[in-house]
Length: 175
Image (cartoon, rainbow, N blue to C red; front, side, top):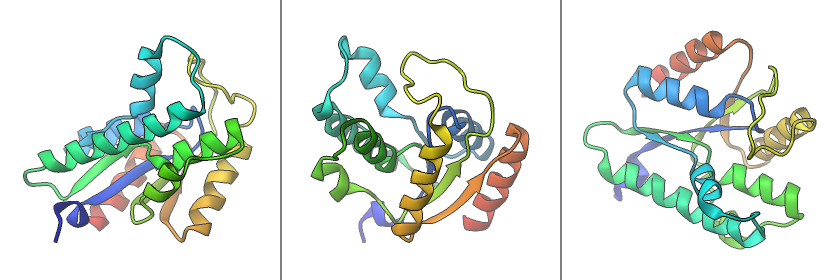
């Protein structure tokens, strides 16, 4: 069996400014698990222009490559933490461009375990963020997508320390 199929993948998903990066970093550090960071941020920061539709497929490829590297480097752990995955890129593409590249759709990993982050705290400005006033609507889109794909997921909300504690409990039961 391929190594990738033996790895548990826990993905933090949800709209912008919902705590994905903060939570994924905190959980990876506290539980000593490998972290796959959000590739889109790196890609967009180095782009030097506004992104276009075709950039999203490149971002998806970069995200998958980062996941593959993390899996290839695993020595003892059987779980990786991902600050986003192709679900985020798919919904971003559909929202921004009204369509999504087949590469993204065909490579979404519905076997992952998702932590859907509710945007129930104050928006923080970031030059890469675009949807300050649409976060709850986007949260519902993420939720519907997970349900439609029969994905395994929990919803996390509330103060950061409560989120971290709850997520750690869930992950401990899984691994």
